[in-house]
Image (cartoon, rainbow, N blue to C red; front, side):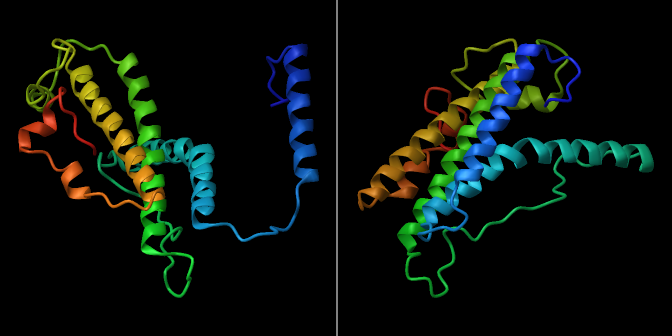
Length: 212
């Protein structure tokens, strides 16, 4: 922050003011929780860690690991490699905790799914804006893009596929929001009916995007 060599005087003052505000906030915060957090509040805390740290740090770690492996072993990591797996008990500790019911677990899981969909949606939108390739596609990309119907992207195949995924991610966000509303109201919903398309081809129809 302050050790950045290109900061001008205004930026330094703004950074110092931001640091002072953060310290004042921490100094005035209670060191002890006065009430036990609900599972939903715990999930919000977990989401904050993912958004502020892991969402950017973990891909950076994977890129660095890939670079080291290629440099030392002369091989690249497989595209589907999973060097680290994350798991959470938040909303699922029903081993004697009376406050964690099946309904609470469903709400927490749906909340996490909603936030993940929003993060992916934002990244896909950014990638869509960056990629405008219109030639030299692999056979696999051509085959995948040909499966998608109703797309406005005809020449730029990457955008054709990404655009479809963006629509499906938007449908996922809408599904999660609607589901959370029903859960909070205590109303039942038919999960299978909502997410199951009438046919396999519906998965690739931009006019009827299915949740992921």
